[in-house]
Image 1 (cartoon, rainbow, N blue to C red):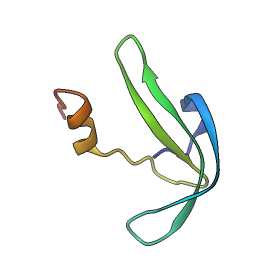
Image 2: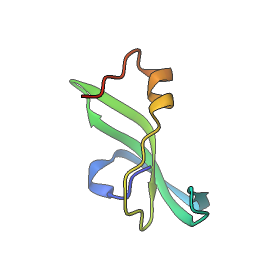
Image 3: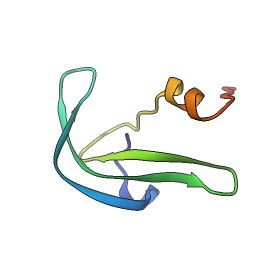
Image 4: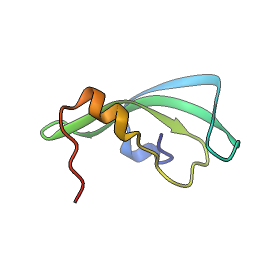
Length: 72
């Protein structure tokens, strides 16, 4: 999930969709799109959530889609 529309490409708008985060706050899903640089890596189907303060990334979902995740 991300809260910055400028980082998303191929945005597909959504209506009447909401998501809950860890502290039980609901955020309105504005749309879904892709982030990244196609020459290196692209993360697909990222939710654009209204008023999201921090970007959230699921490492386990990345590991399912990408073969290796390395944190330095």
